[in-house]
Image (cartoon, rainbow, N blue to C red):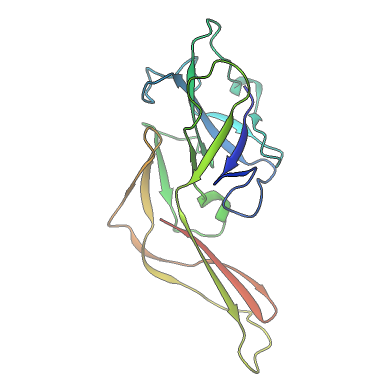
Length: 198
């Protein structure tokens, strides 16, 4: 199986930037059609298989042992996929932690469960965003020529949650309140601050 992808109705796009990046990796589950994702519904060991793209939105197995094949008997299956892939998924729970904002791509949780009842072909995964993005644009005031050293913080935001890959429900850890520092990109007298938050 090979997958194409789309996000928010647009082909080959995701929340960070305008397109997928080379080596972006998704996790894929293949399960029996109509059943909830569980250890017993997963078919042929297709449990969090790793698929990568060159940046064109087409996802192929990351290695030979990650390949996924349709059942030989022609029975129909469903696919669940998410980005970015985590290798240590336990009980189908994706651990969210937004404390470190250095790599926005690593925080940009996307989820797909639109492909159901298939037994052939290369399906198109429709990803939906699970997080929110805050963007802050700053411009230096009169007499200031550079924003080097600019510091921005966001306080009082919850930073941890469990995302259930079975049903797409995000459960926030209410005690995980913290102050985070958005990623800052400075260009002379302008600056862009970006943060992905729960």
